[in-house]
Image (cartoon, rainbow, N blue to C red; front, side, top):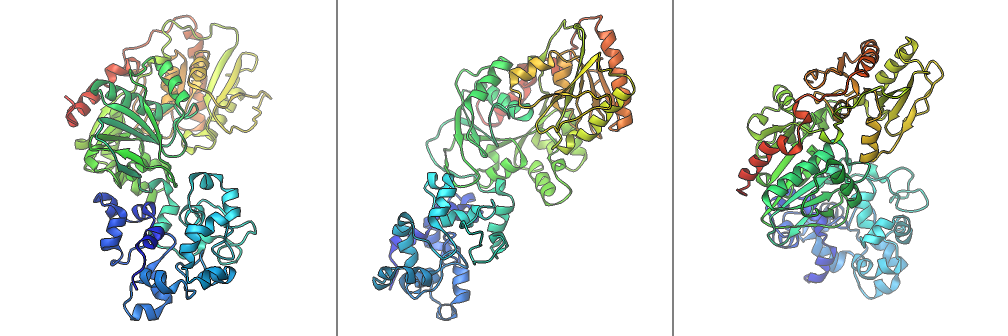
Length: 565
């Protein structure tokens, strides 16, 4: 007897199917139609709640008879107490608990999906439906099936199936140790790479900026630059700008503060959308949507849905360096070196470094631009104008590439050497998660934890000396923010990082060692004293030119690339 079509649709999960089978997304196929016409016969899994491979392994009579496993389960197997998945739903247990379902001959999974969840019925002895929804308000609020969520996402996120501390099999430990297919395992290990969910919509000329988050405390450096680039591109072409976040809902107030600070508000307010890496909304897109991605992982995710010729990747760091040598660094390299993308590289120096170290496709796919620091410019400023001097340290103890340990050791050594006497200098640390610190003379730094754009700019305007380090070929932004403010700056050298003396005579570059940086800080304190006798006169370096000048070539390139002339 053929199974009811409605029951097949009930068990089928479109989001699961798209995330599990990238070829369906790449071909632009409607998931259920593909499963009905092809995927089912190919043995593809329709959802997290039915595994045809498992079903045939456990039911040799079905496999021997050549019967379609889903059809068998829906028409007779479920009622016979056969399980649809390895763990999470027990047909026999469910029927024993609900004899009315058994006597009516209703498939137990179908009953649970249509009525049982709403009634608070559990699918097995070790998954508590009501407990899971009560303790995971995001799942309940989104109307997602609790067991499907747990199997697809909750296991990898460390959520529990019940309040008793047991797994789906009743043991102690973690369900992540339960056997799973390769696709699900990879999705759990790196959820940022899950397929970027879209649905067909009208053709609207639009630029979609895809990033992790947009908020008051995240709109610095690279994220702010991506917003500025996207805004300039949209202004030039008349395309709408939509900012799409993946980790948290976008904060419009943070955007307003950014535009106010840089003095470049777009004529049309950007649209905001949230397409989470976990369960949630889809993004409506049409034939005239273009995507601007902001990292190798957003690029990889978007490319699972969107053709490469509609994707622009803004590359602002050697993203291989985010990881130890291994799978993640290889995946980053593959995205950066993708031959079909248009890549915007933040600084020509970074582009040259990447091409020299294996990302050679940037010779044809990449175009560079120099960032602008004009919002921080303070021409005529005299450092040390007040009584006590102020030293700024970009303190990020949880980001190894910012060399926190080396920086604080060098500052402490400079204090011990008499170059930063406490009666003359106040030390400021800007960054999150800085532990309480006593320097060798008993003084403590002033901590600035969460700063908005305006507060950050105002703080730099009061700093006489800045110390900002980065293990990167990119000069990074804080040293240039400080240089634009007229401060004396100490930063570190690194392979591939350009010399910055042409930017400001007040910028000192030192080896990335405690001794080298201590010596540079001592030299910088002398520069502060000499700079206190002359107003700051910015150089003509590209960093001190307006964004409109620095982005002109890039925007023109994009206009021609996408036919918006």
